[in-house]
Each structure stands twice: as structure tokens, then as C-alpha cells.
Image (tube, rainbow, N blue to C red; front, side, top):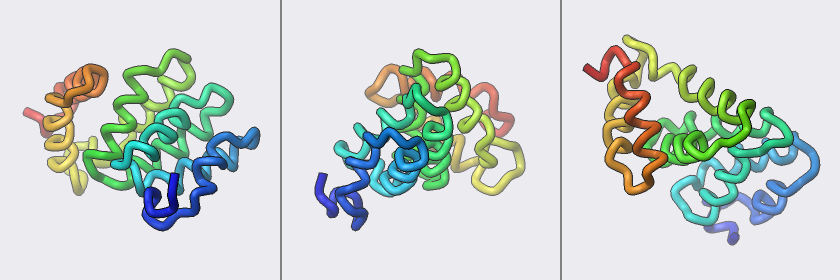
Length: 143
């Protein structure tokens, strides 16, 4: 991965994603979140979101992706959620999505969140589509 792939982040972010230290992996997830729309970063982010060694990595990476407040970040999180096999990982990802302040009625960005989920409900990835479709009926502003 080149530094331009990561929007100026050093190429070491991808290497850091393989670190045995959870804090280093979590920092890599936060750094790579800025480039979620690039295939190279998305692949590494996906792996970090499914980190079975420490849910702190999952949490930090998901928070950074959702803080982007865009379809690309949300898509990466929903894709990982749809593929999470470990209960703790799936639970952490679900908590991050469900605790997104945009999800709450009346919060700034709530309609934006609904529109992003509507767009992802027709995504080419079946897992992303299903996760978005599961979330939409739970949002008061989606009706």
C-alpha cells in the first residue's frame, strides 16, 4: 500500500495492522479509516474490524469509520458486521452501529444516516444490503 493510497498516511499503517499489540492495531485502524474507499485500505480495515484477539481494535476502527459520517465508512462496518463469526466481534460492531448518534431521532445527521442506509440497502454486496435493511425499520426517521 502506498502512502498516497492512505491519503498521506505512511505505508506503515498496513504493517501496523499485523502488530501483536492491540493498541498498535487499533491505531492502524484509526489511521486507515480516512482511506476506507480505497480497496487496499478497505481490505485491511475489514480484517481489523473482525479482529478476534481484541474488541478494542474492533471498537477503535469502527468508531473511526463511522466518524467519517459517509457511505464508504458505514459500508465497511456493515460488511464486517455481516461476516462476523465471533459473538464478541459481532456484538461490538452492532453496538458501534447502534450507538451512532445519527441513529437517534432528532440528532443532527439522522436523515443523512437514513439516506446512507437506504443507499446501502441496494448495495452489490449481499451482506451490506441485509445489514442496511435490518437497520432501516429500527430508525424512527426512516418511515
